[in-house]
Structure formats: structure tokens, C-alpha cells
Amino acid sequence: MTFLEFENLLIDRLGTDERIARITLNRPEKMNALSQELLFELRDALELLESDDSARVIILKGAGRTFSAGYDLTPAEKTGEDAIARQFKTHDDSNRRLWQGIRGGMQRITNIHMYYWNIQKITIAQVHGFAIAGGCELSMMSDLVTADKTARFGHPGLRFAGSRTSMILPLIIGMRKAKELFYTGENISGEEAANIGLINYAWDINDLEDKTIALADRIANLPADHLAMLKIHINRFYENMGIYSSVHSSTDLDAAGLYTSQSYMWADKMQNEGFKEALAWRDGPYQDYSATPRE
Picture 1 (cartoon, rainbow, N blue to C red):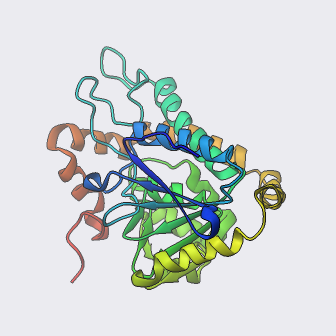
Picture 2 (cartoon, rainbow, N blue to C red):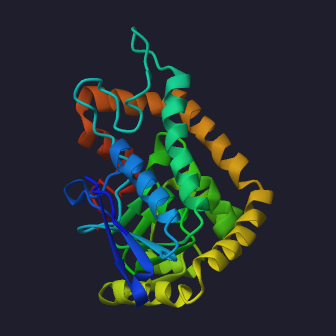
């Protein structure tokens, strides 16, 4: 099958009879930050692979030193909007936030995540380095997750806003641990993530790729249509538990979360002091992520 050329993705085939498709997020200079352009390309690539009967399993990984550091918050040159919502009008002429535009941009990205969740292929996120914020959300929408033992999973964005597809967490690890991670925005290692059931396996970084491919190839012993049937069986269970309504409601609340006092302080820091200073303010009390590490 001939693949389209993508600016922000790489696609290759591997495994027995090339029945595994691999998508690589390819913005290593930006730590594979999820720009609107990358996410739209990801949707296009997934649609292409879903119609390819020879592809039975999809591996999603990141190029360079990390899986993904989250959503691209770099302002666009002309509009000043972040790289997720730039096609929507998110502020009025007095620079007051417009909920409809903010929610519209967020909902468009949520729809891509949910398409990835429900695609009729088995998906495996292969995580090394960071899977934080949007990167964590994207990895959690995979059917299976493998990781380097020292990889970091977390959502620091919860310290100034809400979340969207992270509402899947209570279904994965239970309410208590999900609440702890939500209320602190802290990150955990790949090894701890495996211990609490957030991911399937945590392996040594030198073994991660080979073992992930071997897992994918083992799954791919079954034909694509049978795997799709099995996936739909399991996904229907979680749909009956309310995953769709929860995720879409979370998107609404994420947009509403930009009107809290904490979010306004974050916006002021971003505007007046810059991105790096805003991150240091956000993470300083916790001494993690962009803040000075603990001794």
C-alpha cells in the first residue's frame, strides 16, 4: 500500500508479513508536541490504515528522546492563539474569552482521540521519555501501552485547566488513584504505571522496541476482521459505562476551566512573563516538571 507523505508523522511497516503498521510522531525538535497540524495528520493516517486489511496492529511511538510532551502551546504568529484552537475565534475584540470557540477547538481534538480509541485496529502506544498532558491523554486512548521503566506519565495541565480524555483514568486505575493524579497533576514512572495497571508493561529502554514489536506480532496472528470484532466487544462494555459521555462532558468542563481564578493567573503569567516563567510558576510548589528538581 502506498502511504501519503506527512510533515509531522512517519509511517512504516514491520513484523511478520508487514502486518504491523507503525506511526511515529515526528517533531523531535519540539518533543513531539501535539500541534493541530500533527493531530489532523494523525487522523488522516489512522483513516488510511483502518481501511487497509493487511494492517492488523498499529504501534504509536515518538521520534527522538520522548513520546510526547503534550499539546503545542506555542502561539501562532498571526492569531496569537495556541496551536490547538487557532481555527476558532476564542477571544472577542476586548480580549475576553469566548467559550464556544474554545470548546469548539477542544472538541475537534477530542473527536480525533475518540476516533483513535475506537479505530478497528489494535493499537499499542510505545512510550519512552515523557507522555505528559496531551501526550498522556493520547497514549491512554490506545488499546495497550508499553513503556520504558523510567518513562514519565502525568498531566501537569490540570494545575491550571481541566482535561478531556484523561477522564478514562478512573476506568483504568480506579477512582482513588485517579483522583490523586488529578488533584496533584503529578507524574509517575513507567514502572509505577505498570504496577497500578495504567499501562501493560514497563521494560528496560534497550528492550522496549523489540518487545513491543514482538507483542504486536503475537496479537497479529489473528486476522484483522477478527481482531476488530474482539476490540468492539470490549469497547462496547466501556461505552455502556459512559466513556463517550464522560469524555465529551470533560471537554466541556475543560473549556469552562479556563474561567477559573487559577487559569486566569496562568494566562496573566503567560502574557506578561512568558511561557517558561509560567511553567515555573505552575510547577514550583510541586518541584517537578519544569521547576527545580528536589534534592
